[in-house]
Structure formats: C-alpha cells, structure tokens
Image 1 (cartoon, helix red, strand yellow):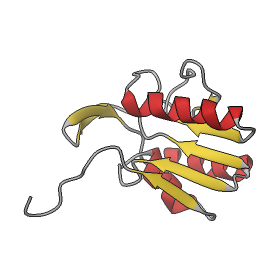
Image 2 (tube, one colour; image 1 turned 60 degrees about the horizontal axis):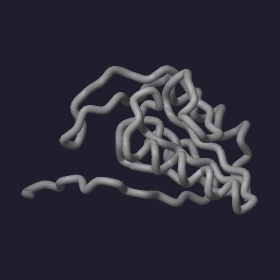
Image 3 (spheres, one colour; image 1 turned 90 degrees about the vertical axis):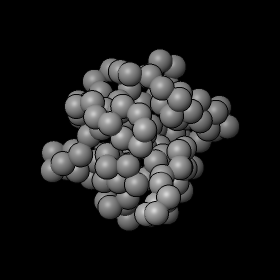
Length: 126
C-alpha cells in the first residue's frame, strides 16, 4: 500500500511528533508498504524516507509549545502537488487541525484519511 504521512512540524527542529512519524514510516516500509512522510524543511529527518514541501515557517506559540509551521498559498500549492505526484492510497495526517501542512493536506486530499492527534486541544469554556 502506498501511504502518505504528513507531519505539521519542521524537520530541522526534531521533536516527539517528528520522531513518531519517522519511526512509523520506517516500520511501515519494513512491512512492505511504500511510505513517504512530509514535513517542512530542506533537510531529511535522520533515518526516514521523507520529502519536504517547502521551508519551515516562523516559530510561534501553538497549543502550549513553540512550533515552526507552514501555512499559506505557496504551502497549499506544494501540498497539492505532493499529493498528486504521490498517488497515495491512504493519507495519515498528524495533528490535522494544526494550521500547517496537516490542515492543508486535509483540505486537498481526495482519498481516505487517517488522523492522529498527539496533544489535546482546549475547547471553549475549558
């Protein structure tokens, strides 16, 4: 199966979600799947088969942490192209409501999506 994995955070600042995406991609490849991860940044995350649609955005506070996120017209165009060229049978999106590559991939996807939420998001009145 051809699986597209989307990470919302920049690869050049490793963190828990990035390591999870990398490890998941490696495990899926070991099982015989074709798996590709997408995260912002020019470099590759150590040990994974990855592509980076664009440079990482500016650091900003998000959900109690500081993260480098990509969002906007150029990022949206790159995500659409990545999805089109990838020909994925399923898309695994991490942190799908984060204003980043993940949310853009949700909007642009035309096939099945699986989502992983790594952190709780506070709703109104909490």
